[in-house]
Length: 584
Image (cartoon, rainbow, N blue to C red; front, side, top):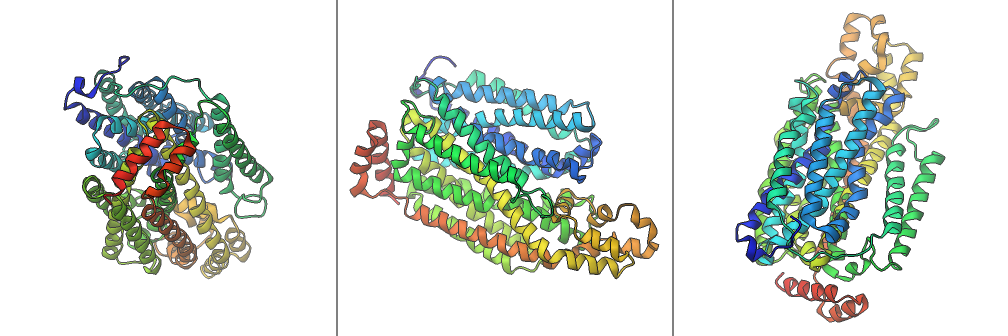
């Protein structure tokens, strides 16, 4: 792996070896980004912690968000390391880190706070391995495949990247009830095979860009983005008498401070010889608008997964006879049409973009996605499943139409010696948008619940034998607790009433903790928040469509962009992008 080798020397089959290995890497990385979502109740039960206890909320949030935060922060730096020291070498190191951390997660023997901290710590390290994989896989494929096959290759890789996040829900739901350790152990054999396979078969095929590491840029970027991501995470927790923590001085300080540090990072990047973010790349029209489209698409898509899980687990599945303990697995199963749509359309759109150009596919895909979000706003909360499944299928098709051509256009627009850093920047926008989207969607839903749920819940509890004082106390508990209870597959009313259930008559207790009481109360308050959240996703999708449509280079401005960049490779890549764009 240490010697640079040409594609002719490696032979015609090398590109398929690179595709199969990087697709395996992306698949297990993204499966693990979501596998714990469905498995969390069993994981916390296994280590003896109640995640709904106010003192344990931070454990819950870090188990959900920690992996995403780490990959968002580090993926650019690791892409830059790939440009400097070899993409295959950095990719292989990521496979090794990922596999070792999966083993140590699977053998967790501690319980209580120590067990939670152990799991969170190794999930963070697992995220470091995942960041190495995500940062370098697209660059390896772009190096290995000719321009007329990159759409297909990146489309297949993109299928693994996004489909893995949905498949993780089903895998976690199947394995966790058997033994929660299996949730982490399932990755180990694939990790071992992938690590050895990558070490033996993957090689660097493009020149390494030897340069000094931009330590000032790395430190300010990591510090700023971590502060923003952590602020989003803690902004979802109650503060004082408020339902969320956005008014907390700590959250506001971290958010504002993080943004100021990121501004400082931007200033530093314009003054160092070898910047972490090569800002001249954004003078390539295809790259800059392609990244904007990817950012907005990720904002629209990121929180959708969580909202659909809550919709299914908290309302629809209980109303249709499923116990709360069963809802996590079945939520993953009922969301499979979205994965199927994506699996169908992404490879096909990649092939078509190689032949016809990406413009109509990316724009059309995001318009279709926006229309499905609108259709979801008018769908009743207690919907007919065939209609819901059809919308998820079409939504997945729209996302697949966008994802593969977008990645192909963005990566093909880059000069060869900047593909690692460029892919890392692209992945950072996507991963950071996922975290931001979760914060936005959760906040919108919580805001919707907080306005109407207390009165609805209080009146419903009083009507079925709960004392006025206790009903009022329960109704004014933070809405985030109700949201997390539904998300984790707990019976929310059972959790809220606690030991008070024993003071009620058997019939009243059975009704209150049954399948219909809480979902019927939650339906209208949830619909209010859901409506606002989906309109946010519609706006984000429309912006992504517009950025995709106007992303084709304007020939009259090519020489200006090239001259401004003072970068021969960027100028060459810009002209290449224009040639490709003329076909779309």
